[in-house]
Amino acid sequence: MNRRSMGAIAGIGELKPVRRTQGAMTLQFIADAVRLAVDDAGLDKDAIDGLLVGPQVGETPQHVPATVAEYLGFEPRMSNVVDLGGASGAGMVWRAAAAIEMGMCEAVVCVLANVREATPPRSPNRNPIREFDVPFGASGANISYALPMQRHMSEYGSTPRQFARIASIARHNAQLNPDAIFYGQPASVDEVLASPIIASPLHLFEIVMPVAGGAAVVVTSAERARSLKHPPVHLLGAGEKITHRAISQMKTLTTGPLKPSMQQALAHAGLAARDMSLLSLYDCYTIMVALTLEDAGLCAPGQFGRWMDEHRFGHDGDVPLNTHGGQLGCGQADLAGGMTHIVEAVRQLRHEAGARQIRNAQTALVTGNGATVSEATALVLGADS
Image (cartoon, rainbow, N blue to C red):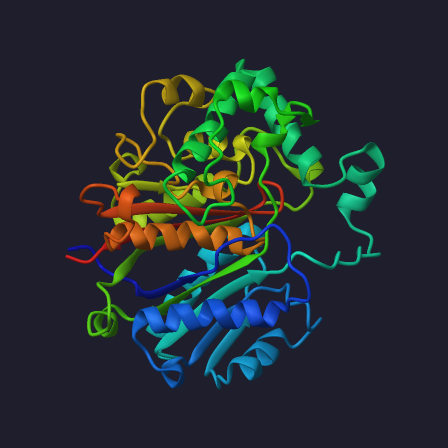
């Protein structure tokens, strides 16, 4: 690893997703994921002096870092809430590295978790979504993500079968991940297309399964990480961009803020998307993967389907993609779904992925997406030399 390290991931922790919970606390899920990550790093609890958490902690509507720190028994010198939807996990990693480089702290735990019980209250606030989207039927993520998919098919002639292949690949890769919610349940392209239409043209199997779960990572300096339990995984580049919130405010439906985010992250690392050993791409819906492949420059706009026909996407393929099954195969524990893409990248770059290990994995592109193709973060991670 000859490129400059901006920081390193020294520990990871991930809870097995479950479909439902009963009597569970988000704080306990957070604690369990943090414990795993800190233990994996080989650190004592008192060594953690930075804390980054998500905004959705059911036990408190405010003072979230303080509540979580108290529950964990931490006294961090730097703490914050990262509220970027599915991009929150990736956004946490570079923020942690920046805080460490500034000397604010030395070891930061980044954690997201979710339980599947209570329904969050709807906000009464007026905003573009409530004024311009909901009255016309664009209520909820399924409808909102169906719109870019429809536009892509109209503008470029992409087909339902091409999108369905993305879901089928995710299910195929999930068969090597015993913790995946769809482990033991592969799905062919025909089976994806036979699943019910939820929001035309999106089929059920093209949409993430909401689950309960959590994940955490520990970020520290490259120098310190090398003295710890596992080979460090270095942060080589990061990029972030927000362009809108409501789908009605999106300037174009066939490209999004991940394009400049990935460009920035790759430029930091001095690499291109085609150089990556692993693409760990946020996949809440099949359309999200299609747009990301095109925005990464791996293929021309509108050509993801033809490009995918030329490649293989398993751990032993020429373009490994979401080798843990992604969220489409593994499940989405709300904002923690994005963190699983980081955890899988770390496993691959530490050569700890077992039966799904990529041969000689050296670099990974990780993406996060929040709201409706709105909030974007990209990371380039690299193995230690």
